[in-house]
Amino acid sequence: MNTSIISQFYLNETVNAMKIDFLGIPVDGITMEETVSIIDDAIRTGQHINHVVINAGKVVLMQKDTELAKSVVSCDIINADGQSIVWAARFLGKKIPERVAGADLMQRLVSLAHDKGYKCFFFGAKEEVVNRVVSRYKEQYGDNIIAGYRNGYYSKEEEALIAQQIANSGTQLLFVAITSPNKENFLHEYRDILKYVNFTMGVGGTFDVIAGVTRRAPLWMQQTGLEWFYRFLQEPKRMWKRYLVGNTRFLWLVMRDKIKQAGKN
Image (cartoon, rainbow, N blue to C red; front, side, top):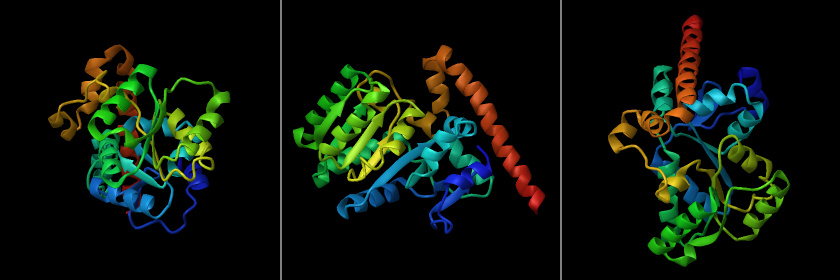
């Protein structure tokens, strides 16, 4: 992904005051509280928001995957999921006040749904995992919070039917726990079918965390940007290339942008 590719997809000529240009991606420089408030307002007023979070790995993947790049930059809210995004943005002179982790945002929104009488649809992960997520939320908040759920195993031919099933459920919030770039591309491709779902969001492996299959890093590691290292320690064989190669590539992209900035001054 480069500036010319981004310009194809980023159609707003007047950038919203909350948006910052981070490596060609229009990231929202807002806090968790502001994000939740914007989403709540959208639900109350019948608007639709497609949301995404970015981390270093996704930024790197967007450089060569133009379909993912299109899906991401077309989202209404783009939050910084990784602490590395916050630090890199500040290094480049762009202010992102804090990370808004997708896992934390989902938890806040499920709680909001309970408080405000909204309904949630949970789509993704293995059948036993999504069942456990729904059971835990029913125990915590009651049955009324659940509009529906289904696992994340399906064929391409089933996608439109799944999107229609979600749309017909009457849900206000949709959480999609499938891998990147599939979740971003699914929400982008079926945005017209899902336009009456007020809030749609990809949440990656969050269902596994809620279900107790995997654990998140301790808070001190999250706050110091070491959550990736905790995940690496849990699955070194699967994660080593993603983090070693991906993080190196991310640092190179940031330094390249810094050098470009210096050349303009």
